[in-house]
Length: 529
Image (tube, rainbow, N blue to C red; front, side, top):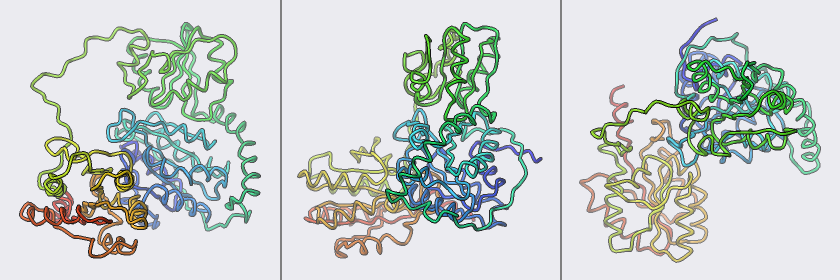
């Protein structure tokens, strides 16, 4: 066996290749991005011609992965937690169609919102879809569970979800590889109606999904990813899910704690496993990274009298990541005074890079809007979202991918004119095009600024589907060509750009201002190669 030092993300990527995948589908999203990037750089992936190009968004990624599974191949699809919202339609329905080749869905959650709009817990989607969910606690488990997930997927004929969090995705440890398996051969489903979700077929398949649930629970109890660890002190029982197990074990080792522990890394959880711990201890402490999913479920699965402490009763914070200090406090262990940050160390929020074209976009847009009242600029997800911060204070919204155009349209429909959307090139092709089509069809008076830096900049400079195509896309959607204005966002063109933007703000219809200038970071990298 080879031993590699890998990020959690990289361990998942390596395991997927070793398990014999024929493709990975994904849209860049922290903390999941490095999985696909690792496969893109892999010698094995190149030799096997494993598909690894980026998808337009998470929904197209999920659907393409389902198509590869239909053809009998093993496939991985990756996204961050909010990306699973975009893919939800296909993901939920894939549990009813089932799979042909093994299909593993990786969702990387971001508790504490380090680079996200929320900290939703993807395990709820797994429960909703009624598919197996694996939640590793370390890098070796990232590898082992991913490798096993493809086997489970083909055994159950269901997609399998792997849920990780930021700390595990972006920390590094030694990982032992397993045997490298061959890819599946092309194989069309034996049941020709399997992937046809007409109601008559779907009802039958849904009953089949329901009938599998007891087996999924039994297997979760027996396959070995969930572990019951005995203890001598039965005053408290610990249920630790995923990476929370590491935090507890760190404290237990330091303070010689010997409580019984139930480590949960495989869902759905068998109620008898939990009941056994409840019956043998005075009270429970439930440690789970993210939402209190298991803690809430326990109310319906347990019998008799029991006392549960966790996020719901305030023993643990309701939001944010867990850490050893929080776990110590939940266990009633005094925590030494934490070192305070010296006053000389100032907080440094993220900022637009020096020389970034987005700066010049906001400079010209801000000047063109001076004659109007504030609060008219709807923005989106990307580097340009940093325009919300000083010294720019240039935007008034950032909700989800593509929402800038549709929110601007709604505000215009309500009477706010001019109404402006600022969106990036990759976000535009991810989910902005349909909103622009709505506006064009209804001739809604909005001004859309597409700040095109020819890359997916916020996640590190991945290829953008929009590069070199935005002009044709807008015309193809039906935009009037005279109101598709291209500008070069540089300081020396500030006056000219301001006049052009001001002219389009006054237009009583749909206009698009295409501000094209390469990302300063990708330009630097390109010149070095």
